[in-house]
Picture 1 (cartoon, one colour):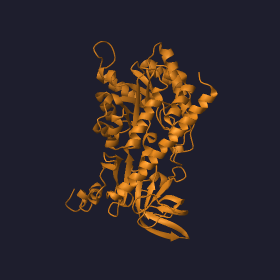
Picture 2 (cartoon, helix red, strand yellow; picture 1 turned 45 degrees about the horizontal axis):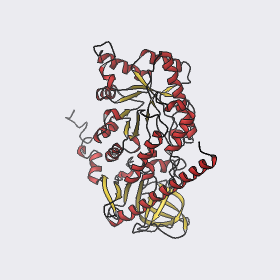
Picture 3 (cartoon, helix red, strand yellow; picture 1 turned 60 degrees about the vertical axis):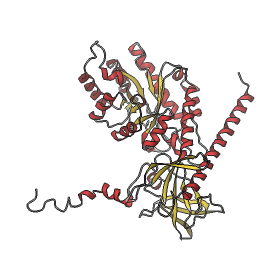
Picture 4 (cartoon, one colour; picture 1 turned 180 degrees about the vertical axis):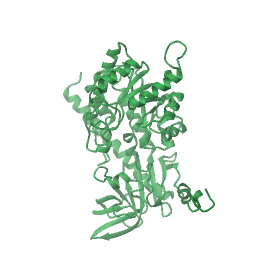
Length: 481
């Protein structure tokens, strides 16, 4: 057993290692912006791009796996399923698949993306509060794990199970031997600092509200009546949720699983789905909190969770990708209003809707680069960084303090690898920017790979009904039905 001094030394060493790691990530970002300008990915004709750090994504996936391996009994089945909603891009899902990460999907579109990326059914989990019968049938046919959200959805699963018929041995239908099925519960432990991302509040739309009158007894009976229910799922929230509250939500689910297994007299629940939601630090380059910190906290708060009796599923999204993405936009014009400088860029509400509409909850750091893509030097100046959309609130940052942005410079919105360039908002019919992954090439220079082509104006017209231009003008004309 180590002494307190040794523990302090280990903590100091770990902190130093994390700081060095964060510094290397920032350096890779700077090199990528410079190379994007030099190689023509970013310029007058392509004034906004998304950049993804492939090395950083690989490192995040490895850190997640290592954090849970460190606290989990050997041989415990663990699936880390990436929340596809955080970055619904097929090449990203394929990269994560290669790094041992599965997929958590919440719609037919997300499932299609996961399948296009080659995700195996057994590495895929379907969660959604509004699954249709067709979605449920497809999931069962493919062998994908499903977490039912509510009693009515459970009734739909009942019907599908009956339709599937017995397996010929008096056991459960064949489909369910492939598709692990569970129930999502809301532990109602409270919310964090952002209401929209707090999913364990008393009135959350997700899951069965455990503290409502009669709900807990109903859940226990639901498992008694359905021996094919073998999983239990919970998710307390994401950004704005403290780790302690996340751990409390997991502890509530673990206690319920123990209660159910005792009530049915066997280990019917064999897997706990812990959700995801590790918050991201958007205030600096530091990647905190870490997966290791969260895993250690869970091990302390719920020690039985990791003793090997339960398989585990996680559903992290933002924390895997956010720090490894950057939106870079050219400054088209630099002006002044009311004595304050304003940089007019090509990145605004179309790529950062949450930030523009809720800047207090979703602030972004902005980094200044010069016309050649090099970090800009000079004294910090208070200024606004604006987007191209036609309303005054289209601001990436208000009163930002950074070297003065001038025409032809570049403004980079940092930590935007999740929920930003992959969630386009078509205000003013602004085009979706191209997205490019980057890593060091064999010659040591930055190499890029296309993740998503920039959207063309022809594609905008097509998506806006261009093929049906006369549909309304001819509707209701005399002689037409």
